[in-house]
Image (cartoon, rainbow, N blue to C red; front, side, top):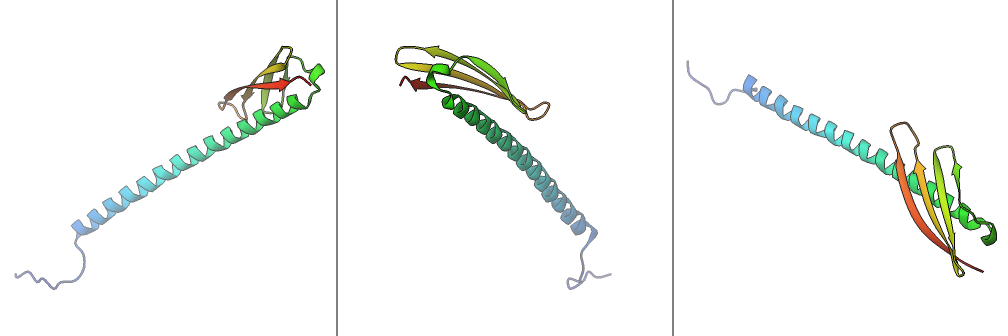
Length: 118
């Protein structure tokens, strides 16, 4: 029997190679999708944590200078604790926030702010 080079179609070996390559591409895309989803979730939590910290800091800055005292506050998704140190020129505010939107997710932030005396 003679081999004809003009035969059309694909062999089983070519089909197996194509399926293997396709499987590698699909698995790679699935892994990239999972990584992107995890990164997006982490970024969202960090953004929400920064917004929580900013809102707590703005709330403390809105308190009249003479009324500002150390304390703590619990909100829906987190807690904040602040310590006020007074001097003749400024008040130093050490604000520590703990943002925990769901179980197993927790972000701690610390910021130091200064308010000049009026």
